[in-house]
Length: 119
Image (cartoon, rainbow, N blue to C red):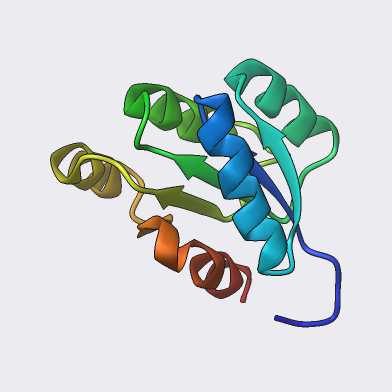
């Protein structure tokens, strides 16, 4: 990763797990803005867009899908990289068919996926 500050907005619907995942991303060198409320994350993302969105699919994957579609419909966030992490393989496969330009990884590969998405 380059020397620039890279801000990612992490969306995870279970606070304890989300805060742990945010720590992991920070340890990889990212500035992390954590949100467990999708509406707040969307508003903040439009007001001050991060470099990338990291959306956890292990909990409430339908909300992750809805959030991704809302991001793609807004001119301010349409081009931002989306990194989906975790989730049931069958549900992830359906989402991958709908949004093939996003990255799909497990948590061990999340930091590298963000770096790749930014290049």
